[in-house]
Length: 158
Image (tube, helix red, strand yellow):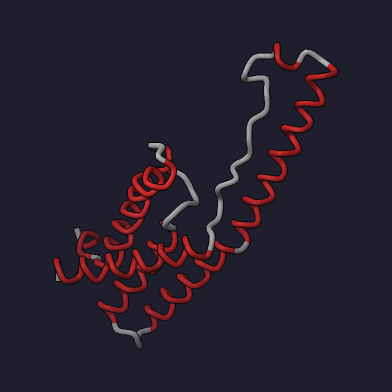
């Protein structure tokens, strides 16, 4: 199968899995809590989106050269993705945090007026996802992860 010989694609996929996996030990070192749900969550250190797109662009650069049209596409794709991770997606996460706070405050108010605590857990609120985007440092280290991992993979397999 030719797709298995596509080095930029394989390196990008490996970078995603590596970045997602490494979030668990980083989270444990920082907070002393083991959280396996980070394996399939958005946000956090390092950015798997940034790792993937920089691995893809680096793989394309190694295979096709920095002057190729396909590298230009991959590089622009990486820039837009990384910009989005720190911009729109991060703002959406911050808004979700504010909305969650409003829901909690409203729940406290409702509990005083009604019998809120007696309701079952499924009847209560469902928190919005606040870990959508990335801090710039998370994007930076995600990008660095993708580049370095791809360079190592290239040396090992090419």
